[in-house]
Image (tube, rainbow, N blue to C red; front, side):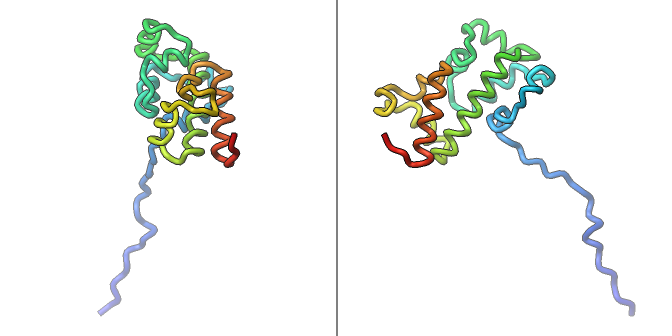
Length: 149
Protein backbone atom coordinates (compact mmCIF):
# COMPACT_ATOMS: atom_id res chain seq x y z
CA UNK A 1 0.00 0.00 0.00
CA UNK A 2 1.13 3.47 -0.79
CA UNK A 3 1.75 6.09 1.76
CA UNK A 4 -1.27 8.39 2.25
CA UNK A 5 -0.54 11.97 1.52
CA UNK A 6 -0.85 14.35 4.40
CA UNK A 7 -3.01 17.33 3.68
CA UNK A 8 -0.97 20.39 2.93
CA UNK A 9 -1.51 22.70 5.86
CA UNK A 10 -0.48 25.64 3.74
CA UNK A 11 -3.39 25.01 1.41
CA UNK A 12 -5.86 26.27 4.01
CA UNK A 13 -7.96 29.11 2.70
CA UNK A 14 -6.83 32.47 3.90
CA UNK A 15 -9.39 33.85 6.33
CA UNK A 16 -9.08 37.40 7.55
CA UNK A 17 -9.27 37.65 11.30
CA UNK A 18 -10.44 41.12 12.10
CA UNK A 19 -10.14 42.30 15.63
CA UNK A 20 -12.62 45.03 16.40
CA UNK A 21 -10.71 47.95 17.79
CA UNK A 22 -12.29 50.35 20.18
CA UNK A 23 -13.85 53.53 18.88
CA UNK A 24 -11.62 55.55 21.19
CA UNK A 25 -8.45 53.92 19.84
CA UNK A 26 -9.62 54.53 16.27
CA UNK A 27 -10.44 58.16 17.00
CA UNK A 28 -7.16 58.84 18.77
CA UNK A 29 -5.31 57.81 15.61
CA UNK A 30 -7.11 60.29 13.32
CA UNK A 31 -4.51 62.23 11.38
CA UNK A 32 -4.99 65.92 10.62
CA UNK A 33 -4.97 65.13 6.90
CA UNK A 34 -7.97 62.82 7.43
CA UNK A 35 -10.20 65.37 9.15
CA UNK A 36 -11.53 66.74 5.85
CA UNK A 37 -11.50 63.57 3.76
CA UNK A 38 -12.90 60.87 6.04
CA UNK A 39 -16.59 60.72 6.73
CA UNK A 40 -17.58 60.28 10.34
CA UNK A 41 -21.33 60.15 10.84
CA UNK A 42 -23.50 60.89 13.87
CA UNK A 43 -23.59 57.22 14.90
CA UNK A 44 -20.00 57.72 16.04
CA UNK A 45 -21.31 59.84 18.93
CA UNK A 46 -23.39 56.93 20.21
CA UNK A 47 -20.36 54.61 20.07
CA UNK A 48 -18.24 57.13 22.00
CA UNK A 49 -21.00 57.47 24.59
CA UNK A 50 -21.32 53.70 24.99
CA UNK A 51 -17.57 53.19 25.31
CA UNK A 52 -16.91 56.00 27.76
CA UNK A 53 -20.09 56.00 29.79
CA UNK A 54 -20.34 59.76 29.37
CA UNK A 55 -23.83 61.13 29.09
CA UNK A 56 -25.02 62.57 25.80
CA UNK A 57 -25.20 65.96 27.55
CA UNK A 58 -21.52 65.61 28.52
CA UNK A 59 -20.59 64.82 24.93
CA UNK A 60 -22.58 67.80 23.73
CA UNK A 61 -20.66 70.03 26.16
CA UNK A 62 -17.31 68.59 25.04
CA UNK A 63 -18.27 69.35 21.43
CA UNK A 64 -19.48 72.83 22.37
CA UNK A 65 -22.96 72.04 21.06
CA UNK A 66 -26.36 72.83 22.49
CA UNK A 67 -28.62 69.91 23.31
CA UNK A 68 -30.76 70.47 20.20
CA UNK A 69 -27.70 70.87 17.96
CA UNK A 70 -26.25 67.67 19.42
CA UNK A 71 -29.40 65.69 18.59
CA UNK A 72 -29.17 67.03 15.03
CA UNK A 73 -25.55 65.84 14.91
CA UNK A 74 -26.65 62.31 15.85
CA UNK A 75 -28.68 62.19 12.62
CA UNK A 76 -26.01 63.71 10.37
CA UNK A 77 -24.32 61.64 7.71
CA UNK A 78 -21.12 63.57 8.29
CA UNK A 79 -19.79 65.26 11.41
CA UNK A 80 -17.99 68.55 10.91
CA UNK A 81 -14.22 68.82 11.24
CA UNK A 82 -14.44 70.69 14.58
CA UNK A 83 -16.52 67.89 16.13
CA UNK A 84 -14.24 65.11 14.90
CA UNK A 85 -11.24 67.08 16.15
CA UNK A 86 -12.83 67.42 19.61
CA UNK A 87 -13.68 63.70 19.67
CA UNK A 88 -10.13 62.78 18.67
CA UNK A 89 -8.83 64.98 21.51
CA UNK A 90 -11.20 63.28 23.96
CA UNK A 91 -10.18 59.84 22.65
CA UNK A 92 -6.50 60.58 23.15
CA UNK A 93 -7.18 61.71 26.72
CA UNK A 94 -9.42 58.70 27.38
CA UNK A 95 -6.76 56.27 26.16
CA UNK A 96 -4.15 58.03 28.31
CA UNK A 97 -6.43 57.61 31.33
CA UNK A 98 -6.90 53.91 30.56
CA UNK A 99 -3.15 53.47 30.33
CA UNK A 100 -2.58 55.28 33.63
CA UNK A 101 -5.38 53.57 35.56
CA UNK A 102 -5.31 50.17 33.82
CA UNK A 103 -9.08 49.67 33.72
CA UNK A 104 -12.18 51.28 32.23
CA UNK A 105 -14.30 51.03 35.40
CA UNK A 106 -11.46 52.46 37.49
CA UNK A 107 -11.15 55.37 35.05
CA UNK A 108 -14.89 56.06 35.12
CA UNK A 109 -14.90 55.94 38.94
CA UNK A 110 -11.81 58.18 39.14
CA UNK A 111 -13.46 60.73 36.86
CA UNK A 112 -16.54 60.87 39.13
CA UNK A 113 -14.67 61.16 42.46
CA UNK A 114 -13.64 64.58 43.87
CA UNK A 115 -9.86 64.85 43.69
CA UNK A 116 -7.86 66.94 46.17
CA UNK A 117 -4.99 67.27 43.66
CA UNK A 118 -7.38 68.95 41.25
CA UNK A 119 -8.77 71.47 43.73
CA UNK A 120 -11.35 69.08 45.15
CA UNK A 121 -13.46 68.90 41.99
CA UNK A 122 -14.48 65.81 40.08
CA UNK A 123 -12.03 65.24 37.19
CA UNK A 124 -15.08 64.70 34.99
CA UNK A 125 -15.77 68.44 35.22
CA UNK A 126 -12.46 69.18 33.49
CA UNK A 127 -13.45 67.38 30.29
CA UNK A 128 -15.40 70.35 28.97
CA UNK A 129 -12.52 72.77 28.34
CA UNK A 130 -9.18 72.48 26.61
CA UNK A 131 -7.44 73.82 29.74
CA UNK A 132 -9.24 71.22 31.86
CA UNK A 133 -8.22 68.41 29.50
CA UNK A 134 -4.59 69.56 29.80
CA UNK A 135 -4.92 69.35 33.59
CA UNK A 136 -6.27 65.81 33.23
CA UNK A 137 -3.35 64.90 30.97
CA UNK A 138 -0.97 66.17 33.65
CA UNK A 139 -2.87 64.18 36.31
CA UNK A 140 -2.67 61.00 34.21
CA UNK A 141 1.07 61.56 33.76
CA UNK A 142 1.49 61.91 37.53
CA UNK A 143 -0.47 58.69 38.10
CA UNK A 144 1.33 56.80 35.35
CA UNK A 145 4.78 57.79 36.59
CA UNK A 146 3.96 57.76 40.31
CA UNK A 147 4.57 61.46 40.86
CA UNK A 148 2.54 62.57 43.86
CA UNK A 149 1.37 66.04 44.70
